[in-house]
Length: 313
Ligand code: B12
Ligand code: SF4
Ligand code: SF4
Image (cartoon, rainbow, N blue to C red):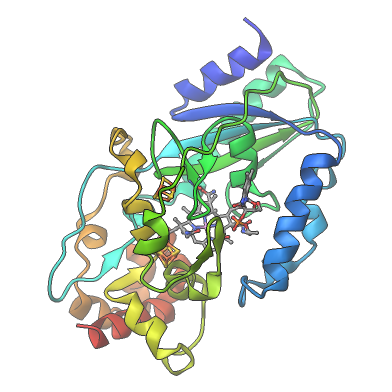
């Protein structure tokens, strides 16, 4: 079996739902990425995420991150558990990716095992693994590796798993045969753009993070008074992240839910009671969300979001 086939088979046996390989060719593709990133930053769409503006040349070019980088092994995991959030008076809503355990740890651990397998078969390979927080434009590389296309909401859409893949990757100095990049199947659909409660998708494929509820509820540390009233109203009962543009995508209809225990919801994430969360103390917050991506919002952020959701009831 070829090295690429071994890696793909190993990735599947580790529980990755999607795996593909992208070739890192010097320049061309990277210049396009740099241009997109700089245009986005220039419009101030990153808001207070200063780390997005730090060294865009590095973020846009894997061969700056890993000198001699020739290939990227992109992986995806389906996090759709098939459940529906409890709606109704008194309940907040948490984005689906945060219903179970933190995907950074789940993918990170499995990627380390895949990396070890690669090193065992190709001892001269230099590698770096990332999940979300690294200086890599993950969606664009996953698209190049054939995992799916970039939808008009700017996220990767998979023909098999719809909107519900989280991504990670291994950068490596070895040449691996690339897969065919995925083709954009959005066509004339614009359901995600229409579904956005805060009009954060300013044009197809471009999201102004400063208007996006995901940013407002997770990354933005501003006090309630500093959040414009129209955005606060648009947040509705969303207290951590937002799935509205993903939920409406017709490509979810074909997707099968995952059985991976890591992504199964907890009662506290599927049906979060606003009143209970408003009174949460630091110790309970830390304890409850130790293994959850929700801890990123910090207790102060979660409390602010809960107060806005109560305001919107
Ligand atoms: C910053 C960030 C955010 C910001 C900004 C979002 C954004 N659209 O940029 C905020 C906090 C708002 C956010 C929200 C969410 N995020 Co986020 N985020 C990131 C992060 C760290 C960087 C993204 C980035 O580079 N943005 C910069 C701008 C310039 O890029 P862009 O708008 O995505 O545009 C790029 C592409 O669309 C592409 N592009 C545009 N047009 C075209 C056309 C063609 C033909 C091609 C080839 C490419 C292309 O070029 C641009 C440059 O790459 C990535 C992880 C990573 N390291 O990549 C996760 C990531 C994108 N987020 C992720 C998730 C799950 C979410 C949420 C769904 C979470 C939630 N439920 O609340 C929401 C979705 C909101 C949305 N509609 O985008 C996943 C997406 C998985 C997927 N299937 O795509 C990622 C990949 C994390 C991961 N490892 O899984 N996120
Ligand atoms: S995540 Fe929510 S707020 Fe952000 S672009 Fe999608 S629908 Fe709009
Ligand atoms: S909702 Fe429509 S436009 Fe948006 S990503 Fe899905 S297919 Fe594309």
